[in-house]
Image (cartoon, rainbow, N blue to C red; front, side, top):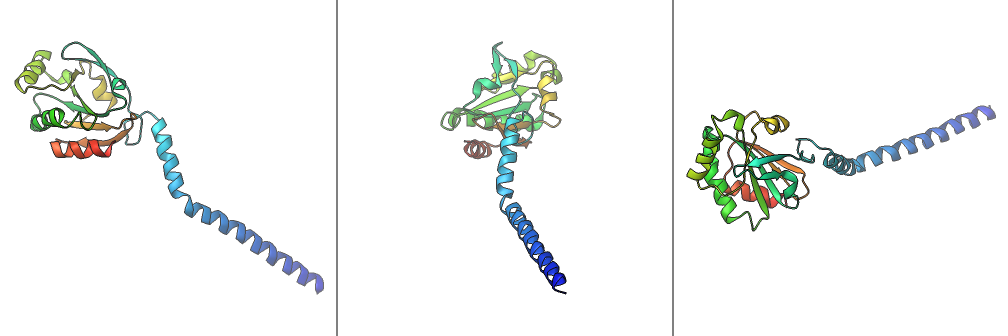
Length: 191
């Protein structure tokens, strides 16, 4: 009988010990989600991709003026990568706001616009140049003549804009036209 009580006592003590270890582990799991999320964000930031939190894929395209321009040239600036075409009504709608933002706010917010024209969907490069001149655009217009960046950034709907923070991380993806105010808010939050 005495052995049975010692055996039961031992089982109870071991049970409490096991439960205590289990509880401690569970509490740690409850406390750690923020750390886990931060670790996932850090992991995403090291991963190149097109999702929010990823390092944006670098690319090099030619500007309307024939100058080679790379996304990596703008590391340290908030960068708007805007995919558009001259025939797209929502693109035309946002162009004046983009130009106004560029002239009035970009320098103060340490921001840049890279307007990537989906040149494979245009009748000619001249159409893009004429559109730029007609609208007095001063931000860089890059020509995606082979559609490679349209494919890389999975651009189906235009305009589509990726907002890249100063470290090259995708902070936001906007589908549809942007207003000047929206661009100010986005640039401010990507600092």
